[in-house]
Structure formats: C-alpha cells, structure tokens
Image (cartoon, rainbow, N blue to C red; front, side, top):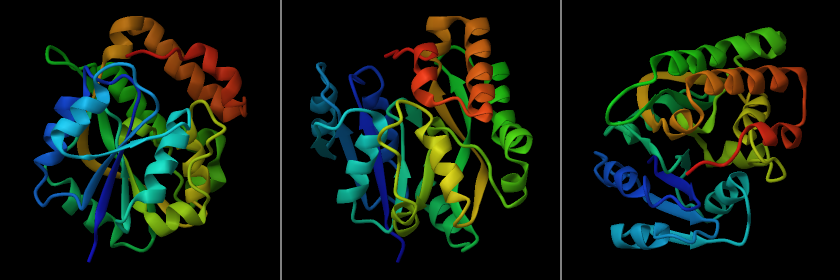
Length: 243
C-alpha cells in the first residue's frame, strides 16, 4: 500500500497557506498525512495550519531544506511530497504520485509549474522555467541528462520514495537556495527524474514584486550560475525573500 506524506515548509505564509491547505485536504483519495513544518513564523501561519487540522511541527532549524528534512524524519508514509505553501495541487495528486513512483526506474518527479494569481498567468516566465527543466541539465550536465537528469525546483512539487530520499542524504541543509536542484543531482544516481505532464499553480508574488524583466533576468542568471558551479551562498543576494 502506498502512503503519501505531504510536507509543507512555512515561514510567515498566512497569505497563502489557507488556500493551499484547502486543496490539500480536498485530495481524492486523501494523503496519508499532512505535516506543516514551521521555521519560526511571527504571523498566523501556525494558527491557520492548526485550525485546518493538520500536524504542525515547530522547528528551530532555519531554512527550507532543513525544515523539509525535519518533516521527512517524522513522516510515516513511504512516499514523500514536498509542497510549497503558495502552491495549488491537482485533486488526484495521491493517485498521480503512486502511479509515477510505481515505476522503479523513476527516483523523483515533479510537475509543470505555472506562476499565476487570481487575475493572470505569467506564461512567459512559466514557459522559461519549464524549459530550464530540460535545457539546464542538457547544457551543463549532458552525461547526467542522458541518464535521466531533469532539473526540478521546489514549486514543481517534488515527489519521491522516503527510502530513496534518505539513501541520497535528503536535502543539503547548508544550502540557502537551490536545495532542490542539488537533490536532483544526487537523485539521478538512483534513477531518472521525471517531469509529470500535469500542472500545479504557484503564486506569482515574486514576479509582482520584482517586475517581469527583473524576474526573467534573475531566473536566467541563477540557472546559468548554477550550471557554471557558483555556490548557492553567493547567489543568495540575487534572490531576496518575498512573502
């Protein structure tokens, strides 16, 4: 029996979390468990999660990678889903995850992510992010690309087996960003990375705050610098926190 644990790292996510949890709790079939791992929110984030009836884990660990690792440690499901607090998932996520990971050649998978709000969809940036899933590893890691490497970011809702996740050591908690891309580099040693042909929707709040052109330049720069091997700690200054 496949049991899916959904792990949601949070920090001051009161604006988005309630909507995300409504979709999570409406899954059919339901997830085995939902764990919100909070990194010290000063707003109503944890109150919203508790009111929704999901498990809330408060942790002193700082950073999304460390929070997701904490959630994975207490998770009881044999499948793990790492979900950002501003991302809406399809109602059949549990079925999709079980079907995808039933293929033993797949180590990890993610979805096609659209950046959107109630009023618009950022088609250009969403398309560019989809392209980087294939293009970044093809250009910078061609050997691994041929073995099945695809570059996933966290807003693509990463799913994997719990055993596989811990076999590669989980997320690198020392990384301030791109912990998801780093995980993909290690996951491909266990099997291929699959892009699932279904859509998830993430908030376009960063694009609204930056403006379209700054967002395009920032995302492209980070992808190129990642490919050239720049440490994520040096890239952090280009990617300020936005809630």
